[in-house]
Image (cartoon, rainbow, N blue to C red):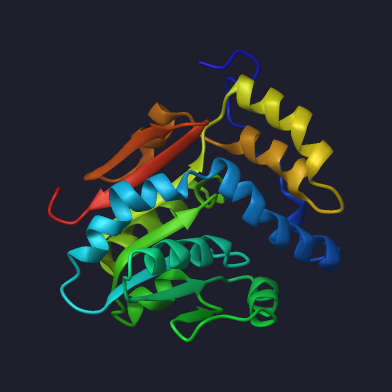
Length: 234
């Protein structure tokens, strides 16, 4: 249990969430997310242990939906892993923030990628389905009603698996990130917003207590939480 960060600081707002924030700083943040997520996101482990088995068990065209996809770096990373395994997968990223969609539209993407200015509720109302539904660093942004709503949407959207990855609040993680991030991630919101994200994030037992029945929370190194829902394990 953290001593300094005993409670979530839900009053903090992240700079990149400000609709009036500097656009170049925001785009630089999206650029640098790829490095951050490769270093600490653990997505290769998640892919090998959770996502790949679900994709291999797909009843039809395998597909992945990223809720709150940001600059699309997680989907690009997963696409690389799938290509290494010769898996044919369709990737969809959704974002309610049009600035993120404008950013990804400036990038070059293979034909099996698509990005939509939409919410999970929009797709759930359309009866869309995907083999796997993911999110990264989304949970700590949400209020309890928003978290419950997105979990409900994700259950409707996922044929096999939902996996939401986020930070776990800790004094040690706060110290390490606060010391190292400013040295490596400049001219973006990474360092400042990362500190705020840690302070807003959950502990394992806190998150588990808020999730619907059938969801499980596990820890992943370093200072990560994985909230998962697997079809058939309710």
